[in-house]
Length: 181
Image 1 (spheres, rainbow, N blue to C red):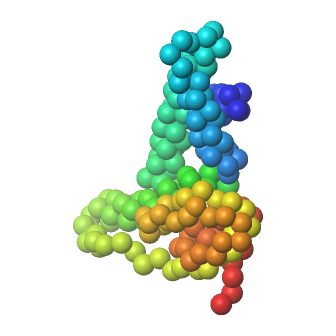
Image 2: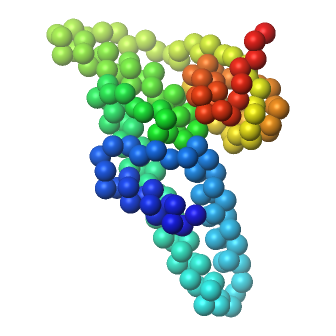
């Protein structure tokens, strides 16, 4: 996992474009971090435990930088009104993206209105999110829906009603199937 994380971190730092990550990337990173933390339990540290402690610090630093850089790239694209390649996002990033997308759209409309010499009224309140029912084909960790509510975690064959924005992504990634009611 270290090599995969290092490669993802290096690519994200070096290139302007948002790189693609596997949909389960953060789940595996979290599991890896948990295993590394288990080595810190003993008082007397062997050479292996000291190496694992250094690895943990490096992994934490890379994860923080990776998340910051990816967040900045996503937000920069949103503010500029550019398309964010959803296929490059993990399931967690897609949920976050869907949560901030309405605000970015509103911001861009306000900016265009202002640049046009007008001040448009910004509507307060959250948008209405249509929901659909899904049957999960694979295990999915807890997600933040487009309505900023938590959903899941989901096990195989679970059925849930979630915002359509999130449902489309889960179906596209082969993690769930829409149920027609």
